[in-house]
Length: 360
Image 1 (cartoon, rainbow, N blue to C red):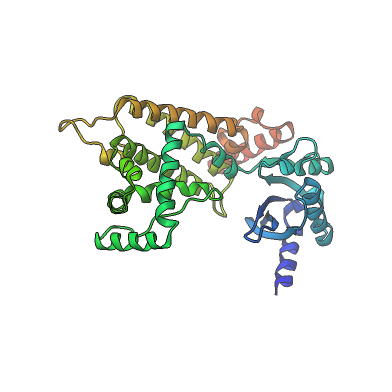
Image 2 (tube, rainbow, N blue to C red):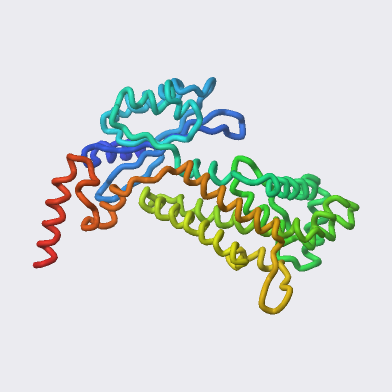
């Protein structure tokens, strides 16, 4: 059955318009510490863009660029796929993939000079969002210590679950953080914030004075609430970048919207307005009926972090050319001069033809 599915896939790829296709590669270590190379292929079929799993292959020894290239070369030769039809290659940022002298993409471009190499956008987004000031990083590490203390011991985990059930808490367990899925930090911090009262009682019962001091500190809780809020926003952006129908146009729109939000949040914070951070607004107590106070140090740290976050995103995502997206969004708003020479005259013909059709 698998051979039949693979045969149908290869046949569809060969019959794609002009035979063009793109591939995305990722190599990772599985639970048995074996390196696995995964490849996803994208092509056009019946006027629809399709994404399918092409192959998985174990890298039994080293994970050098030559090893990865040999695996892909073997698949191309076995399935009789032409390198000349490869129009785009997406990889992550490890040296074996993006190395300028001997990386996988460099080897591919030696065979197909016109192929377009791309650094995985989700990977870049994850790297950009990892930037945090020392003060926030310290809070994160303390949250992980609390979680590990409760979750790391089976007895503590069972006792904490029973405590949450008796207090009719919204949740009964905390969540582990893992560096592999680092965006899970958002769920970890949010769950810790929601169960902060239950955690404080549990720490008091178990004489964990250090944890108890943190959980009683208003400034510490303010920082925790902000982290939960900002990670939630980053997670939403990450989800918008995923899915079978995601493309460069949708991603660019989502990224630009997020950058605009960061700038808007900075301006609103400067005006003592932090309604966009729901959890933070929840715990800040108003001095009077009309205003809510935020510690100046926290306000300054948040404004600084939002600024650095915006800078990191701009660093990892240089300005995307507007010519290609504008052509896709609206043919009439795209100027011929903004396109490559070979497409300029075709665009003019297309625009004039569409105008005539609309007039009729």
